[in-house]
Image (cartoon, rainbow, N blue to C red; front, side, top):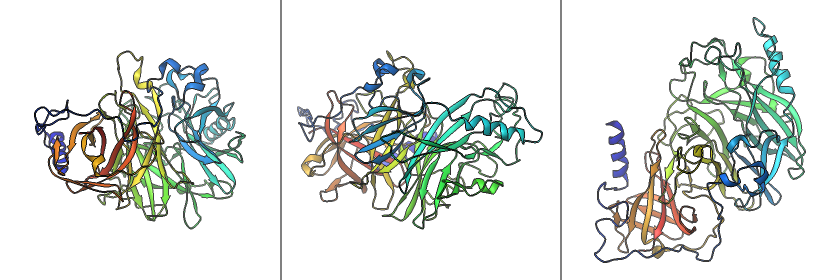
Length: 538
């Protein structure tokens, strides 16, 4: 009953009238008899945008990597150097075709649309990880024997630039239990964050600088586990998912963490890119975000932090991935004037103390004409230094059990989307993936017509689906909305029943054939995102 009630509140917030129209046609009950929808060919009819398919399984093999473009992307991190954007990522691919071909794949692009797979950062696994792991084990009380052949996962890098040096922070996860062979009887071993440096991304020459930090135990829980339902984790902070920020005052900070006891921030020595010391628990950082009762919950459903500082607003923004990654992943945002918090949501709730973070800027969704996307989070947030535009990048997965696609949920496509900023200084994400569609004037006449709209309400593992909305010439609304609209051309602000939305040109990835369109994005007062795209002229 609670879910039904919350959904109805969201509908009413935008004037949505359930049952007031035929969602399948988008015409609503107010469509005059005999009126015919005009086919929409886009706002820029001669623009040639990306045509590669979202189902890339036919070219998913390693031998076809030159055809991947953004296929086989997971946990990306992006930076620009010279004419190119460089994207680095977790070791992950459909069918695990990357295995045996190096560690931390990367690709590059001049336009954020067409990407060239370029290789991997390391041809061999960093040798220091095993040595560090077994050295720590030998110092435990009581000492534990070495793991002779550890099973590592190479995950979630983060790239940044400090002066003239590029720094790549990378995650290495130990899959082996601390003791025994059953991970329900013992927690798995610690994770590590390492560092590599390069002066030239094009040359792909990296010098490995070794360990930065590792998962740390706080003595509050045993590494012995009482079955698969025991979530009282041994380690306080899980040393994966790094992100890096420099404060206006010149301090360097690493933000990291996944599940366990939340997200931590640790200050770094700018010269080395590593913590000043790791002698005590406090040296591993301070918690800046949690979920739930942070004092007792040692298995908090958040990870993949991405920290940025926006000089225009004066805030640090902490982007967080909530829930499991294959389907439910969704992206939340909190902000603070201080790097160590407290981080607050749009409703003023304290995320550092465990409150749910709002707004939510991505969530599983589905526009008509497509299977939809799930698992959209663990993002990179970056700015084009030339245009000043901000971007969001993550993987999107196809939903499970799509007919004709073997293990469809393992299809992971890289997404790049533009970020816009609301008048109150909160980020919102474009409904459609970036395609380099030119910025042209958009006037009131362009708004008139039929649109698909989605409210990104939070429903675990459930895609939010579009419904039809009509923007009429007399500034009234039809289809599944009732009320009025107005448009300010200079600011590209569309106001729908009091909710301000940001309008832009875009590429309709779901259309067949694909073409340009217009989209809008914004937030309702509760912090849920609203996405819309135009699909018909009248």
